[in-house]
Image (cartoon, rainbow, N blue to C red; front, side, top):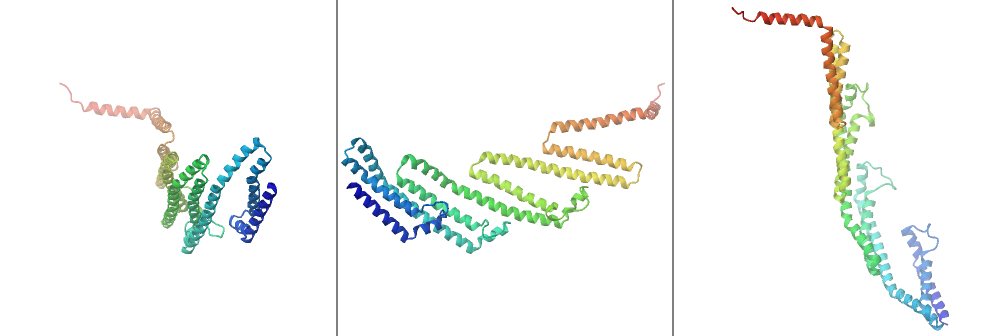
Length: 384
């Protein structure tokens, strides 16, 4: 009889839940909001109805075992049912908090997104160089998602607190609390990167236009690197503009890491930026040396002297070697080896010149030394 009563109540409760949820079109609205209809084959309304159905049987189970006088099973089952029944209000409260918070977060997210779209925030996509399309990245959706998360995290914390399972809810609440505390820092880092990107694009575009106006693209042919200036996206002015954007973003990334407390990553990228600075200065030094080498070679060729071509090559190679050594030393690439190699090369040239003059011009050197000796002796006063 108890089982029949339980079956009747469970069947009636399941029927009531199914009818109520069907009248409210719960499945259609839930699938529309969550888009899980393709994944979940069993509607949520049937799941809730079956849960209520078996819950009634669970509540009546101690009474059935009591009538059957099965004391060994009755005591643990009774204690379990008591705990479950005592815990059901907490679960119900937590579920209501989650449902209400989720609905509130979605409503506020839609409001914020629509307001930002109406204000024209998505137009910044084009200024940032991002293509605009219905499925593309948009700032309004990002801000709406951020607001959604900011509302949902406290709701989840409150729902976990309503469950009152300290061993489970305390670590989760602490984790979510830390996430909520870190969100302002993450938001500040994102804003910093976005502002840096916009400023970098503005400065890079201005630098590219300015360098193009002053005919900076003709510098490679003047340095002997090509015959005609490169145009288009591979022009030297455009490359410099992109490098400016990358440099500004790297500095912004280091600042964002410091804001988030990632000091190790910030230090690593700071050292990388210092190395890049040395490399850039070294390249500038070598480019200036290349310009001077070409200039010196052209001047020597224009003098119409004997062996002008050979002398121009020697001058060009000497200047390039000096500029290359200075550039590599500025880059910090094997300073001792470069200094030693340059010293040995210079000493070798000096010794070779001395040997060539001493052996090849021995007669001339002896004649000159004799003349200098006679001249010095002739100037000495005679002693009476």
